[in-house]
Length: 325
Image (cartoon, rainbow, N blue to C red):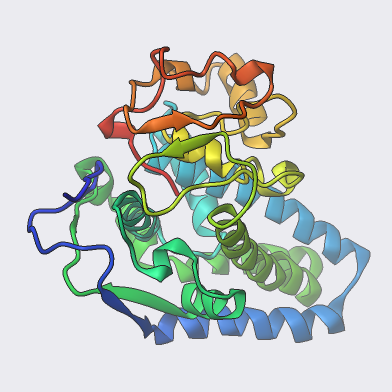
């Protein structure tokens, strides 16, 4: 039996996450290949400490505020509430990461999430192949299922004129940043603030996904799921908290990803700061979520702060929030 999630439903008994083929996508490949080429060649020719600083600052803003808080924790999982104007800013910064537009991100995330929750799924969704092949698949290709499920984005996103615009022209959203960086610092700032940043961000996103679905710490097990998530130590700061993927598979509706002691989660720090000044509210935590009978703790429990997260407490996400990346 297929397991549905919020935006992805199996309306046909033939829907399967297992059968399909990986297909080269020229636009996707040209996009990332051009960024790699400009970043590697241009980055070498234009390096300066100023340009490196631009790369670090723009990466921090787009990855933390954009990808983690805007795209993932807000748009995809609705794990907190904020004013629409702030959501727009965060999601726009998420588009600048260079992965896809807002609806494209939701579709990619949710289809992978749906596939991983089935009893079997294609290697593309599970990152089962060797690193080189998986890199090629994820950055240059897409999977075409023989009998795919139905994806329907919620009306508030699908009919939003701003989201529809940046979805259609998501690659072109780098241009305003190109102009600003060019005026402020010239070609080197453009190369490092756009090309190097996009190359590193997209590659890093793939790497974290690869390792987080293959090996690491595991405190929770989702029974019946084809793919489990793992926590990757020591990457909390670099990934803005996105490396705590076993936690996220267990409690996908939680706005806090680093739920155990010593799990660094910069995205959570920013959310709590915004909550203090009234820009964020209704932040969801594991204890706010409904029970999932398929979620079982591993025999070796994590540190003290998580020992209360047991199946006897009223945690664990309901079907409306039942998504993971």
